[in-house]
Image (cartoon, rainbow, N blue to C red; front, side):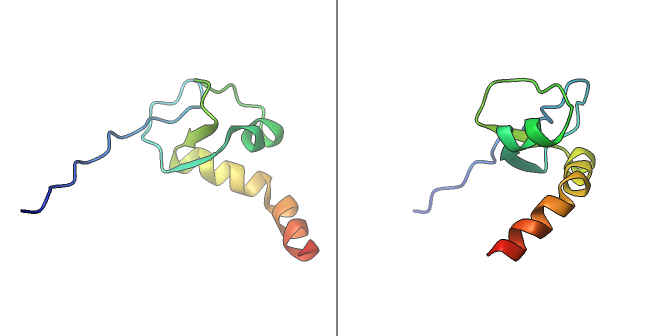
Length: 71
């Protein structure tokens, strides 16, 4: 008989003051280096909601473009 997969508990955004559900997780060091946010928790990865992930992507766009050119 097949086992039924249990749904993972939904993580919350790690940015202080935000209670939205997380969409993505990114290495905490990258988020700390790029943004001036205060993060909750001490995990290796930071969970970001859709709005904060979008801000992070916009802030690191140039850096990601340069990294792609180096390859």
